[in-house]
Image (cartoon, rainbow, N blue to C red; front, side):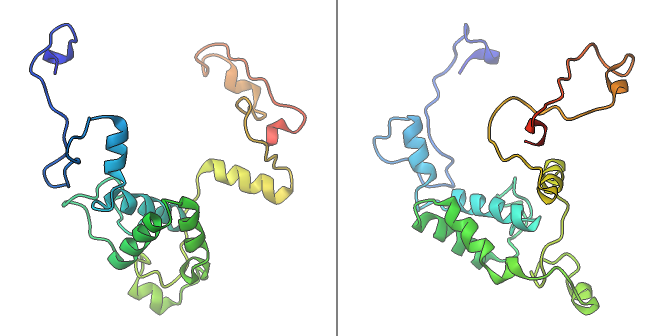
Length: 195
């Protein structure tokens, strides 16, 4: 360690290790990033797999099986469906950590494919849909709204890569005092504006 973070003032030596509540590093571990990576995906500690599948689930349903994706510790909320979370985590590990396999499982499930319509009784019994009795309804990100509109109109350009897209914008956005200085806003042409 360094005193107050100053690399010119070395202090005591700190050894690498893992938190005591988790399984230890293997005997003779060298402290490399490869050792850490192997420790993270060790089957004795399924937390990594559980966090990954929870985030994938959250992307599809708006909320994860554990609704605090940033906190899987003792202070987090309990999973709404712990058996499902563990099964998905085991599926991820058993299939060589194939994220595509998890996407396929979720998208082909009856839970994902059900309608979002809810009867008044079902809505009263489970307003937050934690029991997964209906399809999830949640707001999508602004980028997805743009892509959905372009795709529906048949204008979406699916080319990957290139510089950032500058869509048409009103001229007053770049005039002082609104702007922080002169900006170059080169509106894309030839279909690149729909990328």
